[in-house]
Length: 630
Ligand code: GLC
Image 1 (cartoon, rainbow, N blue to C red):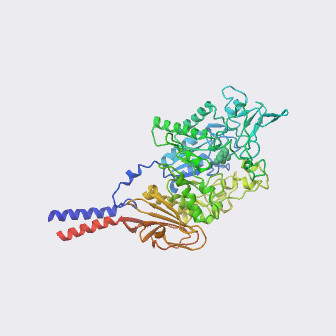
Image 2: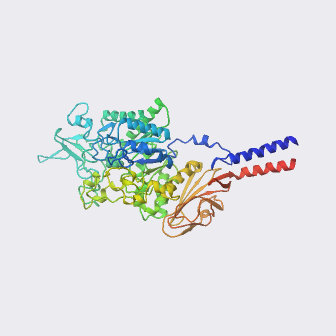
């Protein structure tokens, strides 16, 4: 009797201690699984929150109106607060800035406008302290024409002679013409005559970006060494720029290139869309080249240890080709070929069915074992709020954080920054400057590149220069970090709560996914993991109030769900219990709900905590044991 009693008392005390000492959800688990141990199975990037920094526009530390590395180091803790895993920096290397750093003159040197190598090393140190990984931009397709390699190639130096794609041109009736009709992405012929070498060189982008020749093994080795150099500096991987362009067809036995066929829908012979790019993009060799870069990363890891280094590949190619970049049965490729479907397939008027099929398209095409990723924006595309609606910004941030795999946020989109109108006079993007005042807006990428809005101070707290390199968005007094930090349901705070939830919830990291249009207006995403909490995210895409029955659309849902995340549009509050047969959503409202069936939820210190119901039964059983044996 005494023995029973003391065992029971000890058990009750232990249970009570566990409740008092308990951590917020999800450390209480019905099956007492060690979460830390399970989490170790996932690699760091597989559920990563990636954040793209466009260094010119993030933070200017020296007052020249252009962002820099010290500015990034100074503000990296902001990314930590957001819950970011890794940040990809657009190019920071020596460059004449004809394409704002995507024209590199020295691949292993820091551009002075951004700082010095010591500043970069300091950034790496700060990043390490904060446990934020640094990903660099790797621009393989071209260098700057001011690169030493190009100068030596143009001069016929035997070592560099074939580093670029050179051709004497076609002679027609005694007149010299470019070797083919190929058009540059930034307008006009892709061939430029070089007086010194008396040959044309290929440039798929601006004239100052000559294409490297990947049929030359020396070029491959030189670029592999670029990867090795930065890996040696401690970076965690690379975003590979303009992947589909890296190879073009090899010249035929007569050393001729073929003309590309026309697109009937485009009547502007200077415009990139005028031709079908069957010889200049998506050549099969490109896939193997990406695999060879992955091999460089893996080799580095074998020799030096540490966590896996990753490749993120920029390609807007057809989905079957994009999928090949992941790797195949015998070779690994990019861990994350960017998923641009949310950019390329959704419009302001897309309905829930179109959202669902866009999301499912990636998941259906991806082979088992690969990791999905979701990109909402970047420095080349109109901002998400301008593309899909300002009032859908939270909704889209919630969507990408709810879907499985990694996600990529472009700087400022966590705040709800939108495109800024830039006059022709202030336009600097070569893609627009190569056009004319009447059509430049269709081509300009300046609107999404304006300085980051930190506060309502001068230059939005980005700089103290009298003029910043691009104008500041007019809405900076309403849309800025300082202000949004004080508003509980600002875009910024919704974003922070999202990633907090996502980090804590194992289901969000590794659960199964079911995506459905619950009506024409409402998209639902269910995340499910055995023996764990189920989450349902509901997004009302349109302007009417909508009511949906989740039990009808999703299997195995409890009668009640608890609200875990709301936006400023929601009428319900975090912690509310709602019937899963009748969930009401306000116009453009988004909610994240969770099952509560196996948990007893209670609030303490403003946080919702969860005690497994199983735990309560155990506790009651022990009380009963105590009472009956007393
Ligand atoms: C990529 C970059 C873009 C750049 C182009 C040429 O698409 O994202 O900004 O202009 O490549 O390097």
